[in-house]
Amino acid sequence: MQSAAAFRPCPAGAGAGAGQLVSRNPSRGPLLPVPARPLRVVVSAATTRALGLGRLRLSASPDDRSGQRQVSCGAAGDAVAAPSAEEGGGFMKTLWLGSLFGLWYLFNIYFNIYNKQVLKVFPYPINITEAQFAVGSVVSLFFWTTGIIKRPKISGAQLAAILPLAIVHTMGNLFTNMSLGKVAVSFTHTIKAMEPFFSVLLSAIFLGEFPTVWVVASLLPIVGGVALASLTEASFNWIGFWSAMASNVTFQSRNVLSKKLMVKKEESLDNLNLFSIITVMSFFVLAPVTFFTEGVKITPTFLQSAGLNVNQVLTRSLLAGLCFHAYQQVSYMILAMVSPVTHSVGNCVKRVVVIVTSVLFFRTPVSPINSLGTAIALAGVFLYSQLKRLKPKPKTP
Image (tube, rainbow, N blue to C red; front, side, top):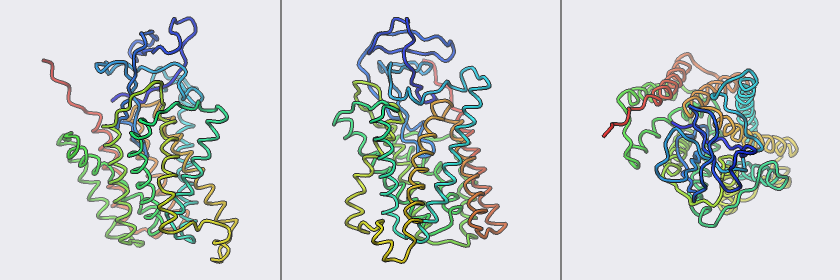
């Protein structure tokens, strides 16, 4: 697999003017200018890890060699781009990558804690999800207006092509919040460990990509571990269980859509901007649903009438929204520095950290058999991520 495109400005004196492409071959190192050609963007499922929304592979022609990365000069990700830790190493690069992993885990832990605290006293998951998209949209607009991230130029045709991703992204996060509102955080994340199972299933059905025997074998401990944990879960609730399962299906459906999506481009769109655009679109997609189902209830007036601590609920909702947006942004920054397999392993470890910290923080009762089931499921996810790197060599004609 290729890692996510790293966006960097053209080197001075390289002879590549504005609008040209630069090609970097990881095995050689130097940047080679190539003539500018019409661009297309393929949003691939390879980097849809940790709510990944698709990897952008910018290509100048359909017959790109997989050993090259081609990006447009002055791309939108320059403000947050960092040297790849897998392209030469170095103490500072390793330290930077380690810091990003730490922030990724930390933001995710606090998101789950604040989110669960709010959902326990304010059982309106649609309102909560819409509030999180609202916070993310404000953050994205702030980055664009201040120039921290260069605002992308995007056409109506591109927005129409990205809309299906925004819809399934909205549904996936909504189902996750519905599950978190009904069962323990640790149980929701245990069920969500079944994402690889649905990824393999949907890829086989809709893309014709059939897994190896070893990949199928790695799914057995995932399914068995989740089943064992479910049978012994103290907070088990059918709504919470099926909501988490629905979240798995929608997120992996998003990955399938990402892999099939192709958008004609006039200039580059990095994956941070793609996530920001999807966040804003998700806010508008969910707004009418919120209004016609739960109604707008996350207001000081309603919270006060319900006898809730207004400042506490609103503050924790805001913090949950900020952490929600931050951990996904950091996830994309990491993905630009490491391979998808490395990112997948990091995501598996992150799930372990979230489960353990939530159990300790909320003092969730966990039986030995429940712990064993969770451990088996997570071990299966780790094994799956390792086996995915073993791709069969293409047959030579």
